[in-house]
Image (tube, rainbow, N blue to C red; front, side):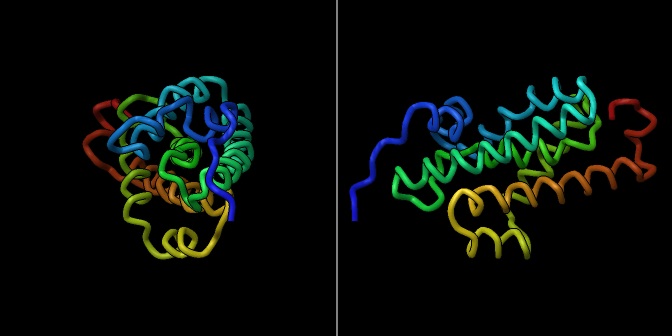
Length: 164
């Protein structure tokens, strides 16, 4: 078995979301936070641009995560946070693109990503490589998007406040 090596810098930049995954403490949270300004800007460009860019992050992120983990010798290296970026973009894909709405979507995504209910846990434990790194986060993002949409349909106080 070969000794782990340092991944190439380009792969490192992608996999760590421009270094967010290298910050100490909570790399997954930093990675998710790094998606917020991207989602805000993509939300202004329309659904097609948002979907296309998110799909690009998923595809390129899957490749980079697989290469980074292979080089580091760790099957799910914690420094890889492009999966959190992709998951957060999916979570925010249905809007609203207001800061309160995006923070609520961010919170729902982080909750599901950390908790990993049912199928998320199965994906995390049984699917390997770049797809395994990415799959549970993209599914957590999809579930968070549906939860956020559902919350926005409920007659709750924030609907009349105009913040979401």
